[in-house]
Length: 343
Image (cartoon, rainbow, N blue to C red; front, top):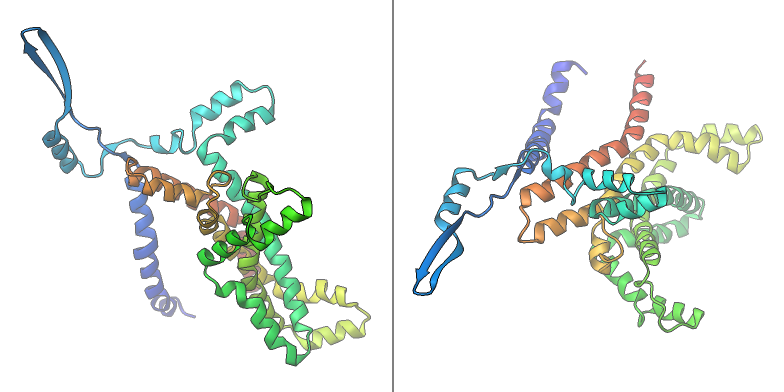
């Protein structure tokens, strides 16, 4: 495709990306550099027969004028990014200098809100993403090998979790693991412990959220790989079979290399989706045991005392940067494959 033709072809999409993605991100960054103005206080002295007393009051008129003159707020630079609610550089440095072991250091850092949320977000992404990839591939291969009359039913059943919205699906699982739910009551009966609850333990809460994440996103991986299996060359498979390759060898050396572009695509989508985990935490009411970066943004936005553009904006930009870092290996591999094919 000629450069001029390609330019006019990509222009509508590029314009939309600049208008609805790039400019909002730039706007959020600029706003995150400012914090809310402090209220203007006026000290007045009241004198009476028994002496004088001082009283402090808010000068509403002066405060409103200050906010009108500087609507973005007071310039704070990168101070919001470095404060205790975010990267907490001073707190991390103090924890490092005062800790005798790495375990003690991590225990202090984990108590900081941002790093606690980052730990859960990374753990959730690191566990759910490979499980969804592996199980999705396995289910796709299994369904592909079913008799023709059973494939339609198997595909429909496999897609059911994806048809349920995340909020509703997580609420259903939340009720099921409750002490009166079928899963919670069964676990209590198996261990003969009426007080046992999946919601009372941090480890069990994390496990429950990850199980839900795998259950909900697995259909996306499955249907993508299933569609890719329909494009595997029959001639190549037959040649490998004639050469004596087993089913496992054909899977590893023929099917998987053929599906690698799809694996890269699914991996990118899963990383972006899993890194913004939010709905299950709210539905499970798991904030006491598990907080994600998206939940911190939501919490910043709903707190009336927080300057929305600074705190939530800083967390949003840090999240975007972390997602890009996580996707870099896959993007680099995709770019190398593209350049290799182009040559």
